[in-house]
Amino acid sequence: MTRYKAREFVFSQFEIVVARLAPNGIVLLDDIYFSEDMKYAWKTIALSDRVKASAAIYGRVGIVELKG
Image (tube, rainbow, N blue to C red; front, side):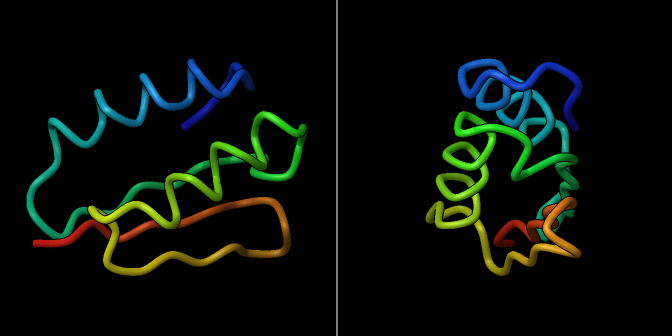
């Protein structure tokens, strides 16, 4: 995920992906610090109650593991 960097789009795309994943699924987000909208979206998703663990790699890629 993502190509368009507005937070509303990121959130809607995240919901689409999550709905199709198995429990404990993994989601990758690109350019997590590209803009203020992406920073906000990343932090919101990473701290979500549905997320078991999250990590930022090299300040560019975000990984979240969903709860089972």
